[in-house]
Structures are given as structure tokens and as C-alpha cells.
Length: 314
Image (cartoon, rainbow, N blue to C red; front, side):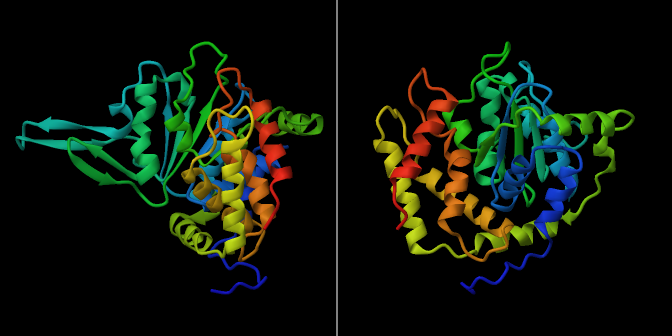
């Protein structure tokens, strides 16, 4: 494999996916790129923000830009695990049980308002997100490839929400917020959505097979030993930082490396540089750290910023 600066060769241009989603969601270029990076890096995406800023729109637009199976699960307090993974049903005609797959059996699964369901129901996604499979009644079923969960959630302070357990948060490669659009972008949204829904105009720009090929190329991008040591140095620094109750795990380091490879591919490079790592740290590690019960997003990001400033690049 080449370690030169030649542009990375992908079977389809991921920037076409970025451009397709950008026609729907105005003023969120960074968020759209992060979503595509998660797709390229075989990761899952958690979008956290207040209602009405475009969380579900981003998820649906990314799903529609890829010609693959898509399902949407509206998480509610009465949702059951079997409503997600499926259930075995007895067929009198055959005298046997037959498995009816649930909506998790799709290449892109949109888990809308995931934190409105109970932790027990949220945990139904754990095996599928970690191992791309589902086990029901002692039988294991493989999920399609590619497989990606795009979850949205409202802030924990809102009525009727449950905080995601740490094990569930850890399954998401990237967490991000959208925030409000700029003034001009919000005016453009009013114009574009006054008479129609821009989602109706999105056509697929990449097939499922092309996405699988892109994932394979991204997985094989070169990361120097110095870059890997830099990631480990950053991870160990989170565990030793003052005020941190729980630093990032070794799995978080693996997720960061994969996300950095996705960022490198989107930049058109065949190799990872420290800038890729630094760009992805806040989004990959921010939801994996704990500063105690009174922690805030701002406090976590402040600690990560200090660590990035203090830890030298090897």
C-alpha cells in the first residue's frame, strides 16, 4: 500500500454524499462531514440537540443519499426490545417458530429520539452496534453490510427522557450537536421549504456496494507508529487529568483511529496526520468521559482542549 501523498482512490466520491446532504441541511457543513466520516469509518452517529434544529433531517438525508435499505424507529416509552430486533412467531401451518426480523435489519437505522425509550429497550441495540448481528432465542442473525445506526436524542433536561447508559454511549463513534443555523441559512430554509420538502429531491449518489468498498479503503489507510503512540498518549492523559472520574477506554482509542482515517479519506489523503486526530478528539471522546455528577459538556470539552494543548505530537 502506498504511503505517499497521492490522493486516496475511492470507488465513489464521498464528497458527493456531503453535497447531497448539504442541499437539505443549510449551515451545518461540519456536522454533515462528521456524519459522512462516521459512515466511512464504520461508526455509529449520535446527534444530540433540542427539537426542531434538523437532527432527523440530517439522519434521513444521509440515509437517502446512499442506495441501501433504510428503517426508522421512533423511540417511545412503551417501545419493547422485540420491536427493534424482531420476534419469533409460532406458525400453526408448519408447527414451528419463524423469526420475523425487526427494523434493525437495515443498512441505515434511524433511531429517532432514542432517549425517550427505557434503558432496557435502548440496550437492545448494543449487540447490533458492536457486532453487526442480533441474537434471538439462541440463534444469531447477521445484519446487512454496510450497517450504521444514526440516533437522535433530546437534551436530558427535557421531559420524558432517559439518559443513555455509559455502555450505550460508548457504542457511538461520534456524538455531535447541530445548534441553530445562521441568519442567512435560516432565511434560505424558509424559502426552500415553503412549498416542498427538500428531502423529496435527494437521489442516491452511492450504492451499498460502493459504500462497502469505500469502508474497505478507509480501513486500510496508513497510520504511522508515531500517530498511534500520539493517540495512546492522549488517551492516558484523559485518565490522569485532574477532575476526571472516568477517562477514555482502549476501545475509544481504536474508535479515534478509525475516525481519523475517515477524516483523512475525506481530505483525499492516503495516510493519517495528527491534525486528523486532533479534529476528531472532541467528537469521538467527548461523550466517553466523565467528570462526575455535575459534569457539563463545556467542562468536558475544556479538559480535552487542555489535553490537546499539553500532549506533544511525537
